[in-house]
Structure formats: structure tokens, C-alpha cells
Length: 131
Image 1 (tube, one colour):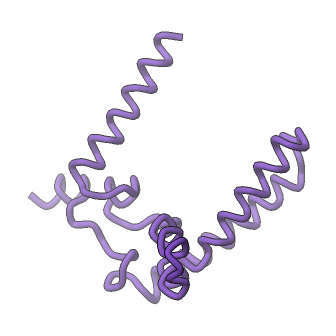
Image 2 (image 1 turned 60 degrees about the horizontal axis):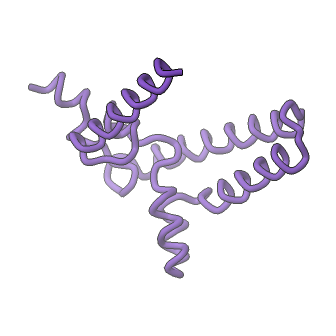
């Protein structure tokens, strides 16, 4: 138990250190520099809460779908006790494909000039290989 706690604390410390060194909350952007398929979702949710709907959807068009999907899966797993449900597995695969397709579209259309689809020149890989 103590070993697992130590490993957990070491992993959390490493993530916090990476975030501090690279100025990015996205682990993908912090380490390799490229945005992940979910980049912009946190900011999109924040804009949505403020009532800035168009900017929320421009930051990530699937942010609301992800919120609803997480609620759906949580309800399905915890309330119905269906951990090995085919519905959850199939919906997860469909959602992953949809998220990946939107990511490819955003990388083609938005990268590298429009936030959040910009390269992080402060990433660990960039710092290591571009001395």
C-alpha cells in the first residue's frame, strides 16, 4: 500500500513539475508540444458557463457532447452497476472515433495558427531537441 502511495505521489509530482516547466495544463502539449484531441475543452466549458456560447464552440465543438457523454457513462456504470456493458464499450468506441475525426479536422483547418491548436514551443521535447 505504501509503495502504491509513493508511486502515485511521484506521478502527481512529475505532472505538476511538467506543468510548471512548460506553462501548459495539457500533458500532451507540455511534453510533445502538439495539442491533444481534447485541447480547448476546459476553456470551452468556462466560456459556456459565462454565456459565451460561440467562443465555447469555437474552442472545441465537442465540449458539450463530452460533458453529456461523461454523465451518461457515469449513470450507466454507477447507477445501473453495468461495468462490462456492451453499450458503454460500443459508445466509447464511437465517441473515440468521433473525437479523433474532429481532431484531424481541427489540425488540418486550425493548426498551427489558431488557439488552442497551436504548437507549444515551451514543451519538453522542443527544449530537448532544439538547444
